[in-house]
Image 1 (tube, rainbow, N blue to C red):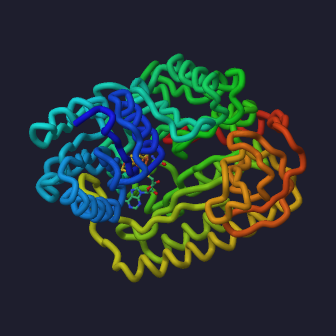
Image 2: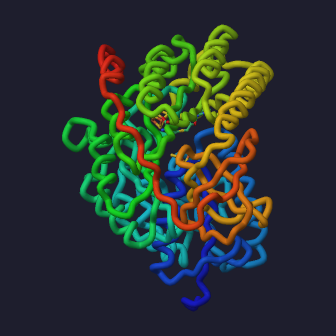
Image 3: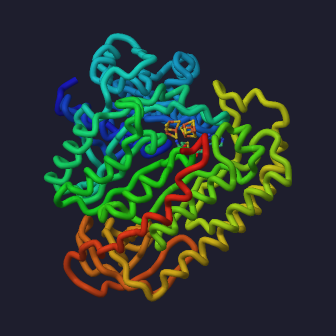
Length: 467
Ligand code: SAH
Ligand code: SF4
Ligand code: F3S
C-alpha cells in the first residue's frame, strides 16, 4: 500500500485519559505518514480506544466492531485496531470474539502501535503488557484543539475502590517528574494553548511515588508561573487525599479555575466503607465546606453510584441527603455495574434492576432541580468565557465555558475559538447558560481575592485516613 493512501480514524470511548491517549495514538500514526480520515468508511486504519468501566462500555465496543466488520468485508485492506482499557481487560478474547480484528494493544504499550500495524501486514498482531513501557506523554501527539491540551500528571491508580476496574487495567500509580510536566505546559503555551486539564486517577496523590509526599499543590504553584497560561483544570481529586494545601493553591493561583470535580460515590458511611473510599459522609462534607470557604464562587461536581451491592433504602437516602446539602453544580450518576477483577463483583446482595432504576430516577430528579437552582445564580453576572466554537445545535450561536465550567451559548459575533470574551448572562437553563458579549477583545482572568488561611486549618487535621 502506498504511503499517501494511508489514513486513520480513531473512535474514543471512556474518560479524558483515553482522549489524551488517543491524541498520542493519532500523533504516532501521523508520524508514520497516516492522514486523518473523516470516518471509518474512508480510513485504512480504524482504531477503537476502549473503556471497560461499566458493562455497557463492553457491549458498545462489540456492537461497533460488528459494524466495522461489515465495512471491512467490502474493503479487505482495512485494518481494525482495538486499544485501551477493554483490550487490557479482554486480551485474547477480543480476537476470539472478533477474529477480523488486526491489532490488539493494551494500556501499557501505546508506543507499540506502529510496529504492531506493520506486523499485521502478515498476520493479526496482539500485545498486552503488565507495565507501562513508555509514558504516553513522551509520544508524539496530534491534539484535537489548538487552544486546549490534556496533560497527564500520573498514570495508574493505587487505590482499591471495590467497584472499580481501573487499577486492574491501568496498573500502579506512576507520577511524572514535575519539571517534565512544567516543560510540557510551557511548550504547549508557546504553541498557542491557553488552557490545560491535568489528568490523573487521583491527582492529589501526585508525587507520592517520587519523593514520598504528595506534590499536587506545588505543581499548581509551578504552573501558575507559566507565562501565557490562562486556565488550569484538573481531574480527578480523591476526597480522602484532597487537603488544605490543594485548596490554598486553588485559591491562590489565578490560573486555576473555580471548579472542582469531587466524586462522592455514596452518602452512606456503611457503603463508603464497603466501597473502600476511606472517608465518611462528614469528612466529605468538611472538604466541601473547606473549598467553599476558600473559594465561595467555586462550582462543585461529582460522581455518584446508585445500587452498589447491599445498598438499602436508608443508605440511598443518605446519598440524597448529601446531594441536597452540597447542592452540586452537576453530577455524573451511574447505576452500579459489576466488573470482573473487582471486590464488589463478588459481594452478596446485588440489587434488582428495578430497585436501582427507581432510586436512580429519584436521584436524577433531585439533581435536576438543584442544577437549575445553581445555574440560576449566574443570571445577570458578567463571566469570563473561553470560546469553544459554534454551538452544536445552532450555528448562529457560539459556545464558551466559564471558569466554573458552565457552558454558555451566545450570539455568533465572529469570536474565534480559543479567545476570551466577557459575557453577561441573560438566561439560565438546566444544563447551560445564555449570554451576550459585553466587551470585545480578549478578556483577562478577573483578579481573585486571597483566601484567609485559618478558615482551612481546622478542616485539614484530625483524620487518620485523610490527613
Ligand atoms: N479515578 C476517578 C474515577 C474514574 S472512574 C476517581 O476516583 O474519581 C469514573 C467514575 O465511574 C467513578 O467515579 C464512578 O462513579 C464510576 N464507576 C466506576 N466503576 C463503576 C462501576 N463498576 N459501576 C458504576 N459506576 C462506576
Ligand atoms: Fe477507581 Fe478509586 Fe482509583 Fe478512582 S480512585 S480510579 S474510583 S480505584
Ligand atoms: Fe478511563 Fe474507562 Fe479506562 S473510564 S481509565 S477509559 S476503564
